[in-house]
View 1 (cartoon, helix red, strand yellow):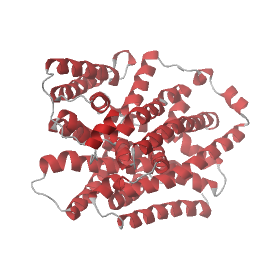
View 2 (cartoon, rainbow, N blue to C red):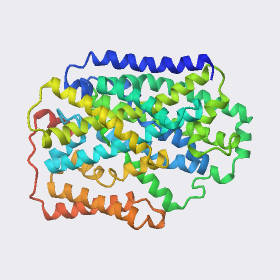
View 3 (tube, helix red, strand yellow):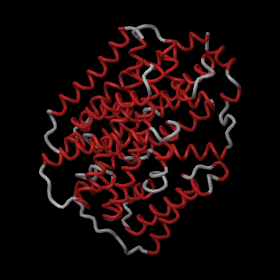
View 4 (cartoon, rainbow, N blue to C red):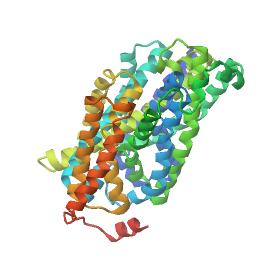
Length: 474
């Protein structure tokens, strides 16, 4: 690493700090801190969503797993993009009908009552903290491989910066830094792929040196394993708190539709780039560890100056996701757990903001502990998805799309889905190599309709307004 490279990295961190400082001066209310005053237009929403979705799993994790298993992992991972396109077209615009909503728990409360709000808040905090831990682990890997900094120190540096600008600037700072980070990764990683191909010789040479199984659709996976992982990725981040929060921040329903859908289409190209970099690493550096594929390429192939920008881009793609989940964890805890169930007094706007900023620091530290206890970035993501896909996604979609309102159905589906997933995964140890998310999600659906059919009269009373009715009918 040259002085110029270090200058690029230091300059990047300086820009993040400057954004956090300037944004903190603009935060005047909890709404500004949580949903950016609902002023975000679709191009900004697209950049922010893309930067948030394409984190450590889609960059470092993708390259590493394609290095190990081939393109089959990329095909499974494309479920993220499919989910984003579908949610953007069918669901995102409808979320704007929930006036004043800031969390997924707010929506679940309208359809399934206060207990559902509490359970959603608990699961939201668990999910976001787990994924945040995966990003922290990716930061530690990046610092260690490229900069020869011990992983723990790298985690502390990277997450320290994330905690700093997120705690002071809230979602406003997160969105602004996302745009900067999106521009970096959108330019640097394609350039890195081109340089990698030139180093190998050509695309034809790359294909010749890779095992044929790495290029087939299923690789050496069982079909059940592929289906399980595809469903896990399809549902694991569907309508999760950070992305739903982005929709709440958008200016209008059409902005949310465009921003969400375009980010989904963009992700397919990004996955191909980072996955192909994993194959280049397989040819050039076959003895490295899985998660080191992408940082090893950056460290060894890029010229002076570009290396620093590439490191900044890789840190950017991870830190953008980390900041999103850090902010969402805090907002979910405050809005879904603390204020409605734990707080004994009404807080002023100033006190509320202070509590959220302190809580952001605490959550950030908790994520560091989780990061040091999981074996890999993708493992951190999969463990987290068990909390969301088989519990919240289906009842949430039923409420948003078809306006179902039944407390018993919502609660039963959440509890049964969680029990089946945990039993299948940790007691039965995933028979047939099938992810526990699949049977958990099926049980989630079945229990929902059984409970609904038995308790059709148990409807949650939901105050509505004219604007909400008009938007939900579209």
